Figure (cartoon, rainbow, N blue to C red):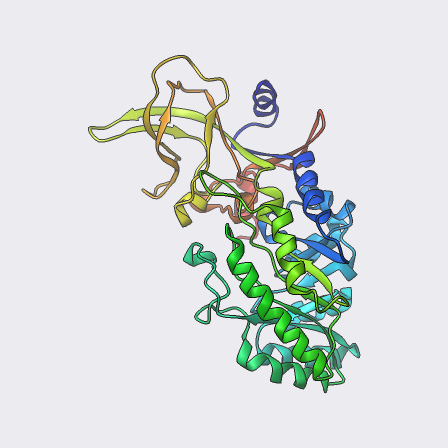
Length: 398
């Protein structure tokens, strides 16, 4: 904890701190579970900081991207283009062209109109576009409604009933090259059952395609592996991999691809914040800190629960408190109804398990500059992103 005090003094607060060793260990734990050819792609949307992403690039990981900006970040972080998979329901023609120029491993196509746009872009550039269709198997992953992606009412993917015909169409188009099949059913999944069902649906479609003369090179089961924020039972990587491998036993020629994000980086990151003031009302005790929903939006967006610890706790009785930020919204909180020891202005708090969907979702609401980011390798800490200034907040305005 004294190291956190030092980092806060050196770089200020709010401050994101990432532990490279933790991220690297999580990647290796998952990668080493596979007993057949496989590619672990880091989902950049979880945390696209270049210094952190490069940890996975140096390990030989692939990258799962969902925008042109993430393509640029992935390349600058060192990911080989042939290990980048381009997902997303609304790729613009500029983004499709950028992916073609980069020669990504595959485009996960999510609608027939997107496939048409990709074919047009490929024809203009005199390229052949590698295509993987994202299957929507209408599976309830039993997660938060904002992060479930495999139901028929979700915007993602192509329903199983329509996927085969679209594959046949792609296989007959000289501008396209069918290479894979993909399915991603949601995030923060803590049960193997949805994965077992999804993997079976994907394998069934892959077998049907092989028998129909449309062979594939890979099957991609997406990400979504849940972690334990509070009392959840985190998925064991070995059990997850065994579930997938069992589903594809009849398809040994396929490379298996997975796209974890949260699983790799959530535990590797924390947010440091200082106490500004204390306040009591007739109903509540508040600890007002310098971090806000602009820095870590998950509690406000999803009612998400993050562990919060005082870096150097004071002795005394713990009492319930809400930990809130300076933003002019009642929804601006980092934690509610937490048993906290006595704190004073200037004390340092650590919000744990904040490496995923923290800074990546942060904003400049209330004209607040975004936090700095630091990455720690062994005993060495270095700035991974400088703190924004008010000039940064207003840059681009006319």
